Length: 326
Ligand code: UDP
Image (cartoon, rainbow, N blue to C red; front, top):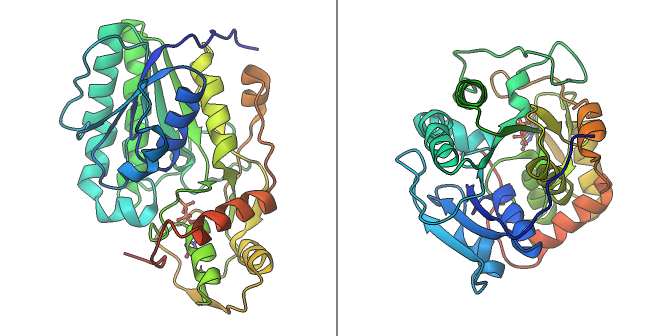
């Protein structure tokens, strides 16, 4: 296993800290005694995601667009670059912003880490594998990405961000780690963000039809956000460069997921079929041997429990609105 560092009250900058994964990450860092500066332009994130930290003296939120620059005063021991639209409808609606945050945003986050000789963690994605011809996907697989299709704004931005991160590591000796995040779900998914779990749960809870794109035979492997954050923290605390897949290998078809959501919620909603988005990957499942071996990490939350906890979030009255396409 890769050696670990002790978390000892370090000061950590989290770009995208008001986002879905970013906000859970900020909470976990503060809970263990780290000081956190979240930087977010609130374009797809929300300050409310950080309401539990607002009164904490070890936490601050800076509203700024990391693509424009990243100025943080004082000590910086780690920079976690999580800023980016991540839901397909979100990044398809913000194509140039998504490319900018993957390129210029990553450049600024790397510069901040370099100036402080801080550890840098890049939030990358299973989308770097595109529509994979190797299954499940190990980190050594180079992927099958359409470089000019609509999804390329996200896929290629993240691939460029990985390249920039590795080039900085090689050229300047910066301590870096790359996490490839697979489909993640849980509380704080925006009900209208268009991702499959939020769409299906909100549709089922509101008694509206569940919108299955294509014939529903495409697969995904869904990781509960608490597990995902535990894996990311293990990478932060390690000396591993990666890239390393952090995701749940429990693969299911989208139609199976629709039925699981109907079963869990007891909803009488019907299933309707809508066109498959362009270049929608046919299958996706992480090979997590590297994370198990080097980080001692694996997911522990079962799909049913994770869906139940996410459904509770949607029924708790916090979020409003229906899922759907932009
Ligand atoms: N999907 C679906 N219905 C929806 C939303 C998504 O069938 O209402 C499908 C989508 O086509 C994809 C899968 O669910 O095959 C996962 O989509 P999501 O947008 O959550 O993430 P992706 O893995 O595509 O980035």
